[in-house]
Length: 94
Image 1 (tube, rainbow, N blue to C red):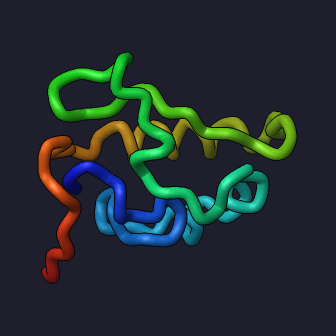
Image 2 (cartoon, rainbow, N blue to C red):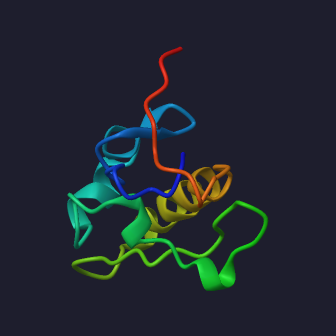
């Protein structure tokens, strides 16, 4: 991951080689922005050392009680991604 400007948050394979809309379908459905780029959701002012631990995720409605653990799992996953903010994004094949 470089600066996140060309990576779709929900639809591209960027967090632990996973597509978030497939792993978190309930959150994808209630997301305000299903086509948004990763860089548009990052709050770098509250982050440190190449990792973002503050995200501006928006929802169409309040999450049900049973959906809240999914949000925590999502945040744990995406907050562990190592970024290179000064680099452009690039594709890597495994």
